[in-house]
Image 1: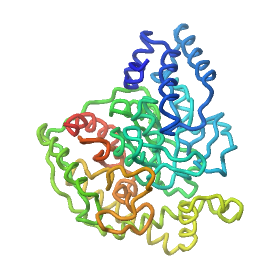
Image 2 (image 1 turned 45 degrees about the vertical axis):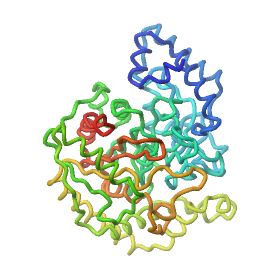
Image 3 (image 1 turned 30 degrees about the vertical axis):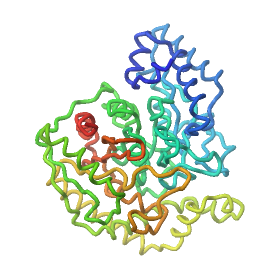
Image 4 (image 1 turned 180 degrees about the vertical axis):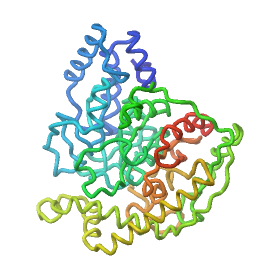
Length: 459
């Protein structure tokens, strides 16, 4: 049974479809691992019963026996991030406010996962309302790192990352607003991919103000599995007909602009930059060209732009805040975001939109010089799970609960496809990742380059 849970998602798909392993055997193997690890790691929440899981797996076997496969995910167990709707399971957002509310239908990308044959067995834990890079909430509690239970799982896709890194699931969905796929991937030695903004459809109420700050994406233990899931989830009908194996990439002649710590503007823990730079230099062997890239844009303006737009987006929860009963049950971070948004006027929004347009022009200019932009995926190594998020980095005080995630903003504000790849690490305590970015719409090119680069970065 242990052997089954070590397989990649594509290997598992092949084994199921050539009938070398049954869907029931697969489900039993993952349930055994979940029952052993999840009580301590707390990555999966609202699990359905074992009987229901095995009944779904049995039906998947019967379909295969009749010559019917729903898709490459047929019979593979998966869990959905608890910010999204999966029919029949509660969508709690990690909040006591929503613990009794069951979803009546699947969100668009969840429907695609289900249509491809996956068996949805649970939700993955998140910080309340998905806020912050550390997965802990008042409803379900703390999610621990799958490589070292004493460390943070990252967030907000922390439950997803822990489920994948601990082999309780072969892959998972997620979303990324401020590094929510990239941070937990970096903390747990796996791959996290945030596609171009809008590449994967979200529910109609996910972005009521149309700010486009969040992208739905994928997590797995390798790029090929991430690419396969992205192919299933994406909106491009032609892409859905392609093989999930994806194209191969070439590093020879690739021009990489290394952002580093943006000239010291992004405080980073001692060792993060050196570790990432050593890994990046490994790409020079296959022919990549790496240059230090100075960002010709005020990072203070970028931060102000982000705060304004993010807090504007959070105003969609204002009705909850204005009800004293629900406000009392909201997390401090959630209330703070709404309060800050309420203090910002239309002139602030216009200023932020102008800065964002200027940033897009800057990005276009940089991509005329470089094929790929690179930076550490996180500014810190995984921290103590019980201690909570950093309030300072190497003596530099942080002004907000999420300023240690500012390195995620170049891609998030421009809607770029960005992938976090793990780099060589001595232990779980110094896990790190490199984020690679390409122009919007170049998702397939980025995944191909990441496929070519992932083993070299781990050398």
